[in-house]
Amino acid sequence: MKTQYLKYTEISSLLILSVVFFLSIKNVLPNFVSIILILLISFYFVPIKLIIYGKRGNYLLGLISDIIVFMSLPLLIVFIYLKNTAIIDIFTTINFLFLVFFVFKNKNTSQHWKIVLNHSIVIFLLELIKYS
Image 1 (spheres, rainbow, N blue to C red):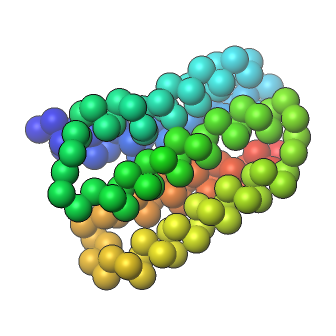
Image 2: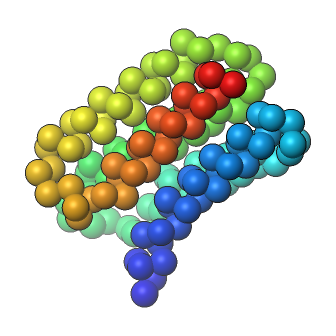
């Protein structure tokens, strides 16, 4: 039951972040709401998720995925204030290359669909901020 709940928590939190971040860009919501949400979600991916899942067998690619997402989300905060697109392009490329590597490395992606979806949403968020 716990893993069933956690399976949908990551995807739904990133989708909620997409909506809140879009509303923050359009000045419907203040920036601090999206900043707090970005920090909470990014800290979920590395320290909290490591504590919840602990050490598992074949989790190295999942751990690398969580670290990439953890490092990519705070860049949204940096971009709100600095407007530097070079950093966003670098992390979009890192996310995309990891996504391609993950799909070709794991032939059975039906078991790891949430990693593919997480990186797709993060790529969308990084590109959303760039073209806003």
